[in-house]
Image 1: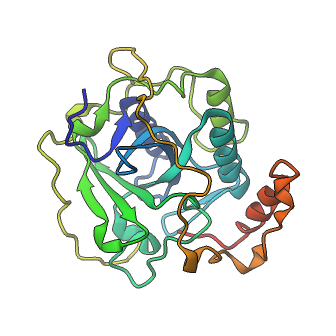
Image 2: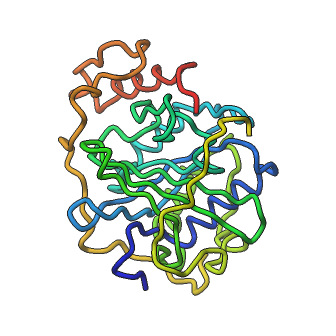
Amino acid sequence: MASPTSQLLINEGELNEILRIISVAKDAELKIVGNLFGLWRHSLMQPVVHLITGPGERSTISKKTFSPDGVYHLGMKKYLEQQHGLLQIGLWCSGNSNRYPSLNRGHPDYDLYNPLMPEKGRYVVLMFVDNHTKGNLEIEYQIIDREGQQSSRVASLTTRDVLPGASSFRLLEPVFEKINQPGVKFPSQRHQYTGYFSTNMLPTNDHQPPAKITPSYSNITPTNGNAYVIPTSAYVIPTNAYVTPSKAAAVPASMGRLSQSHESDGGDSLFKSLVDGFKSTTYL
């Protein structure tokens, strides 16, 4: 049972999936970025992560940069929101925040307005998963307020934040097949929900801000079988949710002006415009 003081909630099975992807990559120094999908509770103040995805087939992964597969990234966002009501609420990244200048608030290149980030909602979740030392897991998460950066929260994930068992969404066969479509990097095997993560790897104390690290900017499952059910109090962000006005148009120039025809073609033209924006423009 999650503590009422939890700032973020995530299923145990989804943490296992993140560690599985990092482990299968076989190099802890690789920069791997995936999506966090879920809902918001308590007046948009508490994110609940119900599903994570990894990199798509066309993504480029190295120790220096990560470039996403725009088709996979946007296709999953569209599918999970329209078919299952899950929103992209943020990103997870392998390694600590110092490895991602554009996502590090202390770096001059910090910029949340790139095609990988959620376009809806006032808040964005960034989760940095550092598993360099086996059995010693450090996960920093940030809940960033786009309206006021000073109100953003940073904390280390503890056992209080972990929901027991597998995500009920991952147990759905259509969702599982969509996430693990042919060609996807690091595909999962069915019912592979244990073996990589244990709550013993996390601290049990109250939330504390992560230790301050001086930036260098060099290269650098369920245990009980029970699926978690979405809380009835979960809040779905409306389609007209907040987008920073001054940044709403801060998209790659190659995207041009988004056509309004997507209102009558089921979103196909908008999807194509967004995918075009990923071509050789997005690196982390």
